[in-house]
Length: 420
Image (cartoon, rainbow, N blue to C red):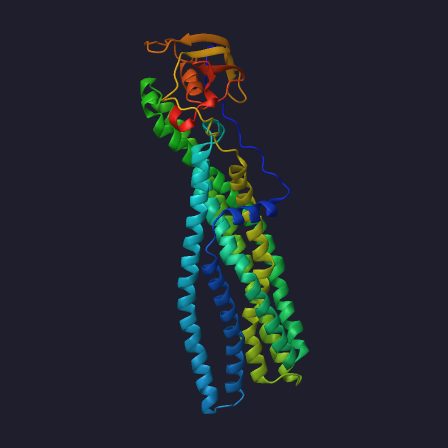
């Protein structure tokens, strides 16, 4: 036998760069989504969009001097309905989010439990935890908050532009000029923020991984009197995370100033443009007030449909690839139909060779027999392959060459459940 049976760490396979949307929709089909709740989310989004189009128009009527009872009552009812819908919509969205989270996590958990042991030799536990929690949350957020909001945002955008055009086409131009700022600044800030946030999350994951590994190996650390060495390593990881956070703080603050400048320029365009159009006689005061109330709705709809959606798409692509890698992994085989409880015989290793992925062979052309009904001890120094023999017998791994039999039958012919 070889002198070591250590399993080398193997990095995750690089995600596929193509077909991510095919993988996304495949996952959507594989997960039992709460379609009724998702439909309710869509309907409430559209209803809310309609309310946001009606309230500025009702406000403009009042400013224009229409103080009839029906106008006032309509305005009050719209505000009341908007408040009521906001509360119900929040509950519906939350329940839909929880149900999608539940189904995604069930899907990933069941898949992880069906994977062969060899999969866990190549993938760290903390990464699998992240896939079950963080990545599923990202996909849920994209589905519920982004995809289901697209129809209502399009409806809002078309409705606002139509309302502005009916007042004066110059208001459409002014609104689009203001909205243009929502393209440039958010894309710049999103790219920078995404890169630094990803870097910080990497440092945080490194600290989490170090602590998880260190806590598991504390007995070994103390046996070999390596406490001081482990403290130095831990302090280095902590200091790197701190330095990254400080840098991100200043960069994020600068991005905040840039965003505030965008809002200030947008407000100036709104006010100064409105003053010019009123003085030129193109619009009236009530038209400008309606435009002022629509401006945030317009820029919000455009931002949600383009830069914000783009950022969400970039984020969900990574999560989709990572979960798709798990979904694409073959399940552990269930074996044949033989029942070990009714079948028996000697256990025989017949010219078995085996090595862990990416490492040297641990067992080379090994042959021996364990007689049925007798006690057989397998002894050897640490690292000589005793655990590997056990892993092969449990069918955690498959031999590279040779075979293992019981009573002359290949152990793969036995049902996995009765075998173990």
